[in-house]
Image 1 (cartoon, rainbow, N blue to C red):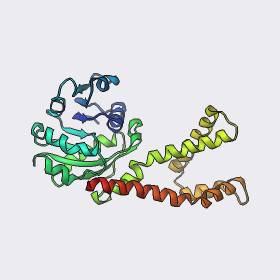
Image 2: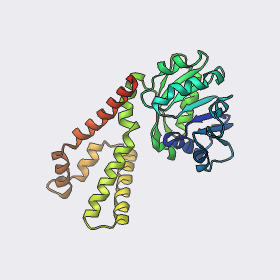
Image 3: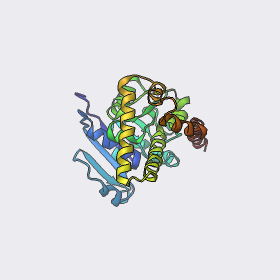
Image 4: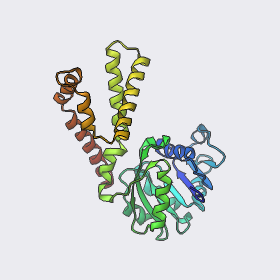
Length: 278
């Protein structure tokens, strides 16, 4: 990332904003000119020990913290809850320099809604990241606004590619992305929790169960990544006729696991659609 030194403001350093920032700061070659982060309280601002390049501001100490953070910023990442986005954009709109790119990480906030609240000289990008950005393995889907140039989109893409992949998707598919990759890590964590509980039920200690399960997930995902074979192929290779795995898979099939996961994805996507209409 030679010569890549943007000034970035993170408005709202909750779990998602912090995950993105943690991933960026750990990314090789990523050297921002400055990073400014705003929090609601002094305690939140002091809770994390960021490196010197990060300036942490508190609205409790200075009600103008958001305005100070966006001054001269190339990219402004809006990390507040969806219902708070409109008020925040209205607050910062007068302080944004022409050419600034405002990126929302809030579910269900459309580019049209953002553009309506910001000056015409300001571009917008809607994003749907997930928390593995904190370890450089995130997925952040991006949708450009109507006044976002190729150069501005490239800048935002480059930022999010520093913490994983950043596919460009049509905005009409963003609710579906929320259901798959946005909420997806939680599905995986829930399955890991359940798998660990199953191992404990077989007499393993919690520590032993976690070791077995976490390495099993890690190894299985790595096999998918490096072999190029489909999950169906790899599953069949493990599932010998009349064997132990076949018996286990039969239980999962009887429980209609594929249908349950499909329903979970749809429920998340539907909720994203509901939020966009509220």
